[in-house]
Amino acid sequence: GMTQAEARVAVSHFLAESVGHGFHCVRILHGKGLGSRHRGPVLKAAVNRWLRRHDAVRAFTSARRSDGGTGALYVLLGR
Image (cartoon, rainbow, N blue to C red; front, top):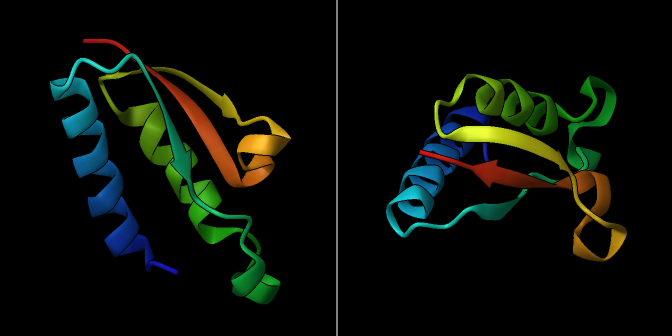
């Protein structure tokens, strides 16, 4: 339910805190874009772009169905 601006700040803070705590793998729930109607999954695409540019992100992939499926990502972190 976040805007892109809100989500960008939240993702940035989450990744910084995760790295600070020494986490190596985290899950980000971005949703499937069902509320975006004709625009498609806005946050899903935006989170994908942000993670590709983030220095601490080594890799990411869609989560298992039981963990959110295509509405969530596993993110591998490094320093």
